[in-house]
Image (tube, rainbow, N blue to C red; front, top):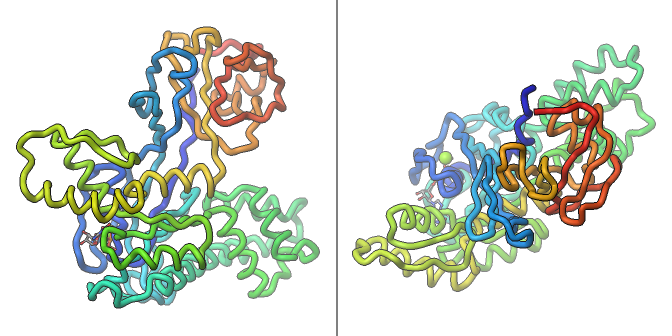
Length: 408
Ligand SMILES: Nc1nc2c(ncn2[C@@H]2O[C@H](COP(=O)(O)OP(=O)(O)OP(=O)(O)O)[C@@H](O)[C@H]2O)c(=O)[nH]1
Ligand SMILES: [Mg+2]
């Protein structure tokens, strides 16, 4: 019997061209990718693995974990997520400017998007380098999000047109629509909620006007691919006021970020100049012969980033995307609920990122379809209590599923 891999969460990195998307991607994944100060450096998507942090239950349970995926540093569990960095947008991409917006199709499977904005205003609308402060990041964020919505609605429009042809004979039109939108990582609940919010409950799908489709699609984009903003390049001091302005306009999901600082800290750590745990507010110098260029860069990072913002923001924006915007929690399935192990004796081997509201039985299905089908009950490993199929999992739960069918 083959065990299904833990559910995968996919984060798409979007933004204007030449704002630091690939630097952000590289700082998370440490995959060497092309980075340069000119528009349209990235053409083919970069795909890699980053990690979100959670306090590992190993500390509280008094054990030492052995993760199957990801890793654990001093009680902080790093859990993998997939990240995709794509080509850059410019205003008008939807009508073919720049590289157009076809490449956004690489992000169809994304669950959540991180929008990298040049908060220092040092690139013009077309991504050409200009003096910091010359271009307004708020304008950039607005124009680019509009391009994202236009890409999304062009995909949705095609699907709605296709479905409209045979919708009259469909038993459940919304189900049919959801099935046809599943390529965009859209589920039925997204479609139902978007129809409700757009006030289209009483209009049959085939009879929607162009405006109806547009408003449905904008809402559907927000529900199915929420966006968080990384206000990047905050190491450039002029960016500071812009972060606040972005927050005023775009709300809570705006984070000050310096991808460059994170990249340098990780690189310095790889070369054993410093000890740095991603996401933390400081690092420890351990190297004795640190090259002058790194010394200078570290000093600037201290002064312009860490002492002002408390971190480089890279981990924070990723975690906010997963845990806040996408409302995910982390649960730890085990087979032996007294030792917190799988049947090989690995302690807390898996950390599953699941949606808030996932039930014990739904988790069983994620582990193995037969476990779901023959589910009897589950056990909360912390308390030893039995929990029923409808139990709503809580963040950090350690759970054993008991089913009629044995699995291996
Ligand atoms: N000061 C500063 N510069 C940055 C930061 N992030 C990226 N850059 C610089 O911005 C330029 C563009 O970086 P890329 O990562 O290639 O940008 P991109 O958005 O992927 O660009 P395209 O793929 O061409 O659309 C490079 O010169 C980076 O060094 C940052 O946090 N601070
Ligand atoms: Mg790039």
